[in-house]
Amino acid sequence: MGLRAMSKFKLLQVMLVTGTLVIAGCSSAPTDDAGTAEDTTTETTEERTTGLMPLDEAEVAEAEAPEVAPTPSEDIVYFEFDSFALSSEARSVLDEHVAYLRHNADAVVVLEGHTDERGSAEYNLALGENRAKSVQDYMNLRGVENSQMYVTSFGEMNPAVAESNEEAWAQNRRVEIKYQN
Image (cartoon, rainbow, N blue to C red; front, side, top):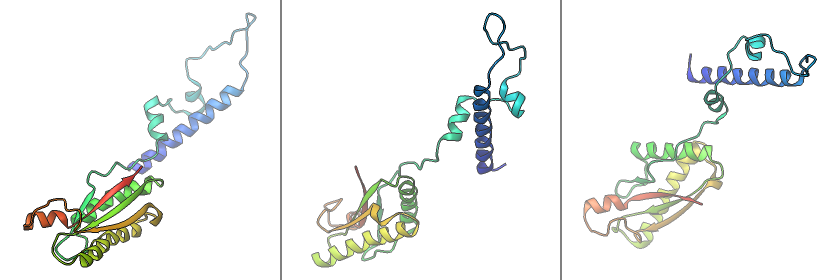
């Protein structure tokens, strides 16, 4: 049985047990002369009416709990030189954010585009914005609302690494995904 079928089965069990308890709670129990309810059977109400064993608290909580997307583990995606195309690694990181944002409709992110120091300030601001918009478009196509995302560009102004070599430049060509409180 698949995970989804098992979840539906557990939910059905919970619904049957709950309905049975409501019905049992509404009925009156016969009383003896002392005014106490008599129960001469060892079966539970659930077993008599549904043929199912009662669920323990953990199973009930599992059936009632909505699926929760884990908090994304990474908050930066990187780009090649002079490019705003998303790599497969970047898409993998973004997919985690998509899942989280779709399950948390009140969450909002700022997508901050950055570049390395090469090129003019104007060009780098535009490239940083294109990188952030590339991330926004990817996430929007996968179901994240535009109202949950804001785009900004810092161009070359906020380097992650303040050095002038290929390693540093590679770390500076990025979009940072920052959640707002």
